[in-house]
Image 1 (cartoon, one colour):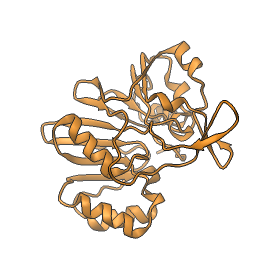
Image 2 (cartoon, rainbow, N blue to C red):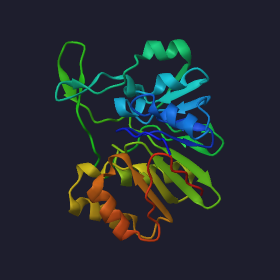
Image 3 (cartoon, rainbow, N blue to C red):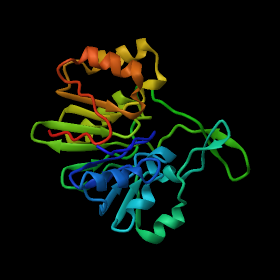
Length: 244
């Protein structure tokens, strides 16, 4: 098909762009698929480079970029910078940056969930550089997902799910008031062992009509989920289109 893949994530839902990939490949793929490359509303799941590096390719027609305030922190992993390539000032020169910790409705029935309460284990990674040169552990509190409220339940679209899948599902349900029936995107199960993944799969049992994991789910996570949800599981990748 001429599409290109990279380590990153980008998706659209009801005219909202959710994450932008690592480079400009997401925009190039959209052009190849005859999809728009201009979106007035852009939601960033968190401040890592593989979700925000392609932002510049989408800014020309954007009006608002939604992000948790911590998304702009200088994020490190083993001393290497893994944060947003574009500084906040450059983005603000092009669009309105809307920082939020609470859930916000970016389009009718489409919610950027904001900061996710964490009753269950989460998936933090890396450190944040302080102004004095010190570092502190990064809990990735900026991690947010998108919840789409439909007549048949809530569809959850995750970028990386550092907040933890169970925490994110419960938060989405509290925002929309309806049960999560579909989960799409990154689940960060790659950071967990088999027993932990199976525990999450058991917790999700009988909840889902659609499960389309990608990005940071990992081969073990995909194998377990596909086995646990044979009727709901859908394999997705670059160029996939999902109809609910």
